[in-house]
Image 1 (cartoon, helix red, strand yellow):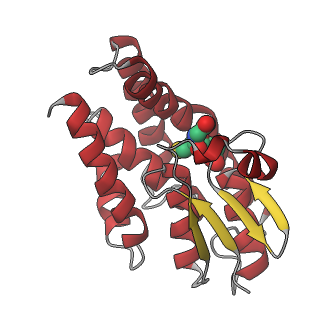
Image 2 (tube, helix red, strand yellow; image 1 turned 90 degrees about the vertical axis):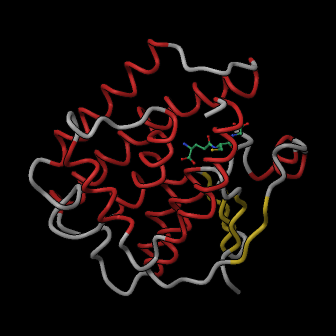
Image 3 (cartoon, helix red, strand yellow; image 1 turned 180 degrees about the horizontal axis):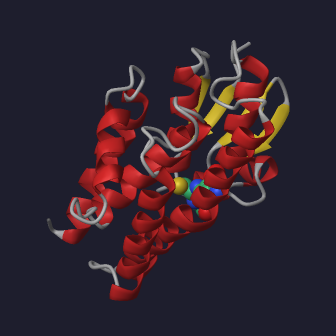
Length: 216
Ligand SMILES: N[C@@H](CCC(=O)N[C@@H](CS)C(=O)NCC(=O)O)C(=O)O
């Protein structure tokens, strides 16, 4: 039986799992969680994830929450090789750094902005948050150095986790190509990945959602 993913396509963390599954050619079953109708706050879902967030994975009864944990699990269990999450300790540690940066910094900024839109009816992003997003782009630009991908010389889980977050933030606060040319080149490279479509559908949904709010 294929692992079951509770998801919402617009959600960046869910798209990281979708990208990873496609990258390792793993078939998943899906359950779309209707968050607008607060399905994520219902008792059955809270039993799966007390933090009431997607994504959640159910692999034959083994329940795992949190996109970063899920993508590491899927690659460790199902990938044909270790290229996405190399066993080499230093490479793996560099990937872990980017996964934590994604969870601790980028996702936090997205949550603040989307939270303002949904719960406070905001139709613009406060300058302080815009500044933090721009600062996070400068960190990413520096992490990339002269590399094509964030860690090592091929795509890893660092990239698959960052692609949905960075492309989402780029809709909210556009990346300045003069300040962060390497980051924009990395996005273009990511868009050429054969499985990039796993990010596109949800991303397009998000673009429409954000345009409606920002009136852009
Ligand atoms: N760090 C978590 C973030 C998950 C998350 O915040 N998911 C959002 C959707 S993007 C959610 O389900 N929010 C509903 C809630 O928190 O009530 C991960 O990477 O999985």
